[in-house]
Length: 292
Length: 297
Image (cartoon, rainbow over all chains, first blue to last red):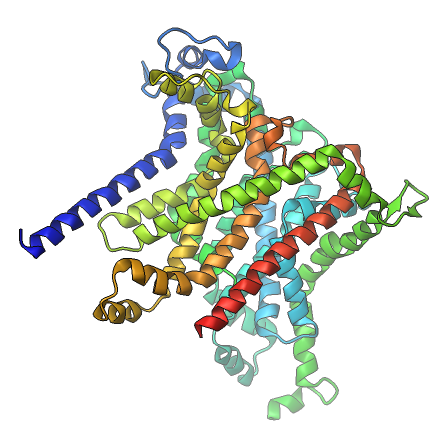
């Protein structure tokens, strides 16, 4: 065998191996999503039969514990969730009124703050930014305690504000947008200054237009993080009726298994849409979250 | 120069910029101070006091009693064990996929998208699937029984930790992969070309070029992974509720219980301890990275 054929053969085997690994990984990654989608298209009776063991602990003979292909495709579960189970819509709304203010608030606060940290020299700028990074790197177990102490002082515990306010002032937004803004050449701001532009003008006409992508990245990252919020509602909200879906879904009653799948699908839908429309922003945002 | 005069003689350009800077940063600084800095110092005060209302200084007694609490020790041990076990695993997995996706083969962008997908999927929306798979009588045990492997109660045994590690990798692998891919892209292609000309194989290239130059992103990935490891409570809570098997009783579980008892002294003490532990871990990593960077240049 000539060397060339040998080499292309070994390359072919290598390619085959790589694709096999990729496909297997992809199946594993997609498995839960596909399972949710498939089961959401089944009737309650069918789902309850397939997963009877979850409730009673008894397994029906010949049941392998997973069912992907519906006997009969139906959208009845979605109908049930949307029109006959008000709790789901209530919890969905809870998720919305927690997530949207955090995303909007954090963007406004962070855009202003990031401009200051990236382009304006003020006293203690560097040590303050360093503190921001430290706090950003701290897990919830550390930051939730100070949050809690202050929220108690302000008598905000139990209200949505208790979850929303600390979320708005998370330092991640300032950090991420600053990473983008320092890349804007200083000459742009200098030139504006030469033309007599004030700081507000420079901010709105020069910095902001160049940061649209960055703001989109931040919005997506903050949305994803808070759509999935668990710790804060559990600690700061006093009433389970105020819980967002991210806390509520795992407590769903097994007798409602039929709608549970449809609930899950509807809950991941906004996140999926954000991903489909903004994957590139998401990737860019993650890349800029790398400390440099 | 003319402009400078028009601003008046009292406000120098520099002070003006400083004022503007503080003004723009004000909302952020105010909120940060109110919800993080000020209460942090309050919580420091809690660490060394005792009693409600009339608080007495007690020195290190709170730390002592925290370490005497078996539930805290369990939570700390589990969290550290989880971190130590999951860190190398997720790093190897993310790096392998990043290396594969960095080659020029067909269809790779499609796979890249797939690997990022779990990142955006809320854990709560698919947790039911994991409950079905890992249930005592669930899918995994059924499949294993075909090979005659006896059923394992995955979630109510030591295996719960393994499940949690798997969920953690499922969720966070994509994030790390993106960071590592960006790092790989930053390595100049010429390095590889000149190494090839010198007759270096791909394994040697990997050890001598890829790994050292990937170090900055690699270290950041490790830092992020440590932070995410402390966040794994989300998965643990959704999988097993407030009272999981003791092998996955994490620090956040411990904190939650204390939030409900309103034992602020204990919470503050635990938070301070964690701050110290994570601070040490992260600064240790950064120190190694700085040394490696110096060696490289």
